[in-house]
Length: 386
Image (cartoon, rainbow, N blue to C red):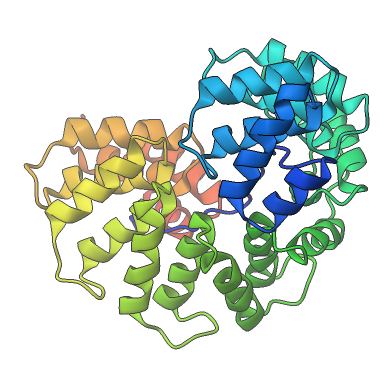
């Protein structure tokens, strides 16, 4: 029986920030990544009230390019630009309000600013507006509206929008589910180097969704994204080495990539790193380390890690055995639809671990696990049923 979960993060969507615009001097220097000179040039040009230069200078403060990062000054210059109706300034000011950079988070304000920019056909703003509807930030969640705005942005070549539109097709949100459509849009985005799209396209190849399963292709795509610092891709590449999918199984490389992902706070990377320490794969077995990583991931809401932490408490591995904590963790994870947690919780009722023996309750939970694809749950139902 498998009572522990090891998973990779799947689909990633993202909002976007406008960078540099039509001001030739600023744009040329900025595009050349000559940030020191770009900062000086833009600082001079904003004195004449040039809106594009205000947007670019705000962006440099926002991202800390050629100057120390300062969200308050970013807000100042975005506001100056937005007050002139500049699409980039409006979008970027909205982005600050969406993420609470130098201002209090205000989704309604962000939406209003994105709309003003999107009405000027700004692709970044269209994508960001789509993101608000997609996630339901400051607006009622509306996948059809999300699709509308992502589509407008994606057709202008915005890579984030292309990736996000693909994800709607992947999940069938606001559109008919279509892995082939998802692949089409992921490819357009990935071909422009979007790391989320590279990772997501890798998932299609790894799982054989809309394409013929191809672990080698999946590994190549994960590697491209991982080498650019994409945390979900680093986790997924680690998973390929962990399981020997398209590569020779190598726990040391699995550990390397899980660690890179975990160091960025990726919950799946943290969980999977904990799994290595729990089982001594490529590292010395260390239950205390496993618990540490599971807790970090569980605190981010990762269901797999919550289940795995529950297992440590159930078995008393590296910590004092505590059925109450195990049960609480299994229950919270089972409510999220984890068939492994449902199985583990059923086992506690069957064996009377921290609860009174309740075979009917155990069968009920085993059946739920079975219905969700857990074969051990199906076997347990057969064995326990009268």
